[in-house]
Length: 82
Image (cartoon, helix red, strand yellow):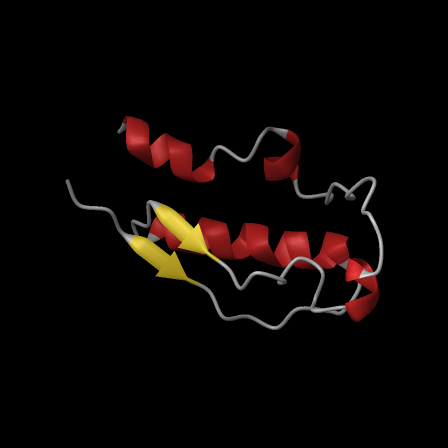
């Protein structure tokens, strides 16, 4: 079994979770279009490396306006079924 892994190094906006998740969604689409089975982002990409994001408990993450996230982001799982 072969697994294609895409690694992403993209610019994140400190503290803007919605924008960073939207950027991630676009990169997931690109990676899936190029045959990736797994997409890996840096560990603090969604927070944009905002030090205040780690100061306390995160109670709720915003959901980006991207339609894919609202549908459950089936981008890569669709590749597995084909």
